[in-house]
Amino acid sequence: MGVTLPDIFLKRFKTVIFIHGCLWHGHGCNQGRIPKSNEDFWKEKIIRNVNRDEEVYKKLLKMKLNCIVVWTCWLRSMKRSSLILPQIKATLLKNLQLGEVTFVSLPKV
Image (cartoon, rainbow, N blue to C red; front, side, top):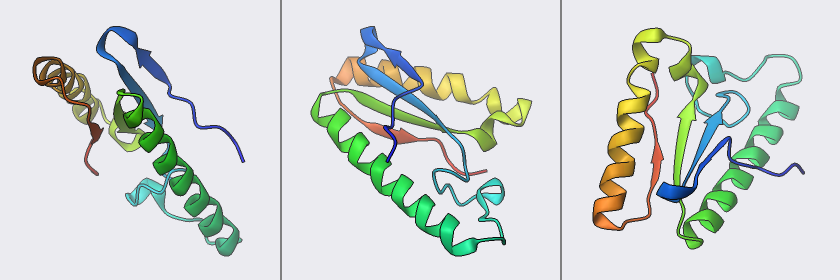
């Protein structure tokens, strides 16, 4: 089993950001569709990935780190991707002001 490491760590904001592939992490959007060939293998693999991700998020939240997940389907469209940074910025500023530790997953498209 592989280790889930954050793609970005913002020490000042005590925040980790994951850029998750929709298929590999079970997003459920159109780009996260399970391949028809060897379907049982893929379903099991994705379930393991999702379970591992959830354990990692729990550990990071216990460490008082904010977790943000950005899905790759959001990055494929310039219009949608332009919404990501403002959402991340708003989350970071809110958490700093309120002293909260949160998990944020940007919505499906």
